[in-house]
Amino acid sequence: MVTSGKANGADDGSGQNDGGPAPAAVPAAGQALSYEQARDKLAAVVKRLEAGGLTLEQSLELWERGERLAAVCAEWLDGARARLAAAMAEREEPAAAADDAAETPF
Image (tube, rainbow, N blue to C red; front, side, top):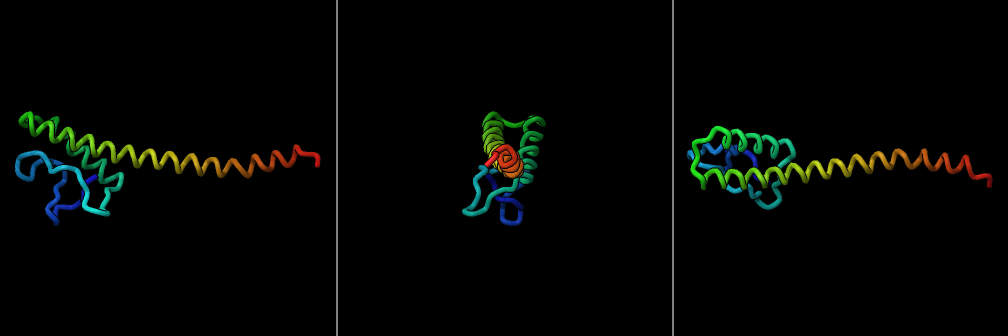
């Protein structure tokens, strides 16, 4: 997870702030990335890695940042899947209850 915005010294994950990789993807207390922010930062990290021209250490730091951003994205997606499953189960419960009531003679 990473804080967003450059105004407070954070960068966009492109690694172009000083020619090297971006700082570690660790949020300040209470500041989490949205799925879209994490996805966009991950895309910037991938683009920077694909561009090449980095030292091994810079590449490894960017890779690790990408792994953390990917974990943030996965966490958001897991949460979205759980919410969808709960909503679908909730929608199916009234229908199942109605079917059971219709089949019960007493």
